[in-house]
Length: 253
Length: 361
Image (tube, rainbow over all chains, first blue to last red; front, side, top):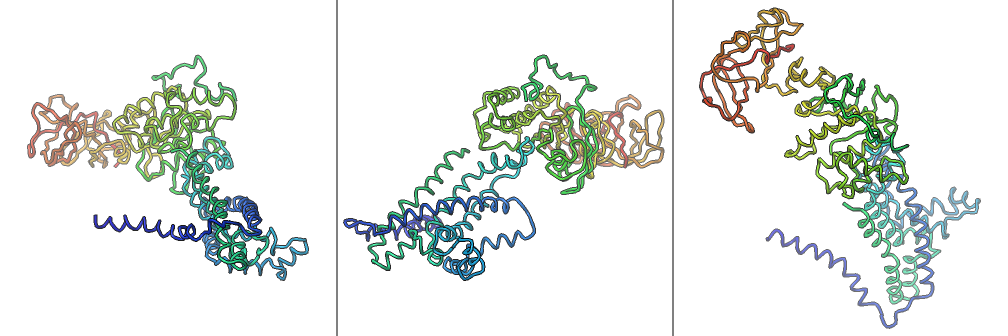
């Protein structure tokens, strides 16, 4: 009993800790004068639109990488794993500075892209790039875990049942990894939407919600932050919630 | 693919498997070598339901995976083909049913898309007596039921060879024998050569043909009666459940019979062709082939060896007795006897001469 008591208290304590800032938000929001600032809706559109584009890129590139890391042994695998971790570890602001040095107008790569008419500074491309860098490592780590959870036996038996490897991936690996993959996508989505540091450096424009929160704070003060934050929650939460629930509903025991 | 090519056994007029005609057994010659994860060299025949008997670690599972194309190996049949092109049906340990698919969807998995897919799957499930479980998920099936669904799924491809890895390992001990007898009967009816690997001599007893693996190679093959009755080496004798493996010296060899001196006693036994007078020889005797009692006067037919009862303990529904002095013998007796042996008693062990198997030392 005495050993259980701390456990009974710590769980609820964690919830209270997590809830505290948001309870505060309810209290400090000016509900009578609730109004968005100029440009807030544009920021919502920018965030949702470009994050969707970024998710396509993250899924298209991150899924093969995650599967590769989960199912294959190759020389340099440790280096590939370290690379994913370094991208995760780097403070977003520093990553933004590195990206600016890499793709900025005065770098070799940025200069070359500029001559092709492509700019990765303060453009839609830069915005998506910042989000891909913010979300991809999380997605790869989580998706790799999901693939590793699929018993290799089942993939091998599918081969002996006459399926080509790509058919096995589509009919066995993907369906069996779907809960984990949905969680990986949900994680990538919230990471990308909340991306601030990198975007601040290379994509101050077009303004997504996190940068617009900063702009609202600078230009108008705290009162202009809360309404946009409520809209941010309303816009960002449905997808990960839906992903979690639908993956569990379709995946039966 | 038409129904007839996918499901040959559903064709009307397919004769039932002739239980007593071994010459018409479906046969396939296996010749495989692999080096990793264990070096295995296996040349033997699969005739009807064939059991490959060997201890854990011999590489039996690796051999099955090699034949299925899942491990790099060299050999025939199917040399060089990727697993998806090999006409085999593989039932791994635990059966590897897809947990996210219902029973009928598991069976339909290898079938081509089309309107007849569901009907084919249902026919296959009915064939293994699982029609009423079509809508169940694997987690809601018993071990034996999962095995039947896995068999139906393996049959959907029309395999030329079935591979079973430890077919009894995931079965309920209470129903294991029943399930196994039914499975063996089904496999015979299917007329597909089947290779089952196991360390369980009990499974081998139900086979049409037995191959024994020791030291990563095949050391003996033959009918179960042959292999169980006449193991050619100590390793095979141990694998087929012989507990008494003694060492002796051949004293006389004549007319197909030999007398062998073992621990001061003389035993009469059938002489294998290679046996020479004076040779060291292994003596294998099943615990079940020894009785206790008074010597009977049937000269040469029954060996009588004086022993002292050193240990007695219940073993299932029988009593296991250890005799010592001068010959150490493991004896399995019925649990009831009119004159039960007592600990420390000096008595006579009776061993039928035909039940004494001489093996290479």
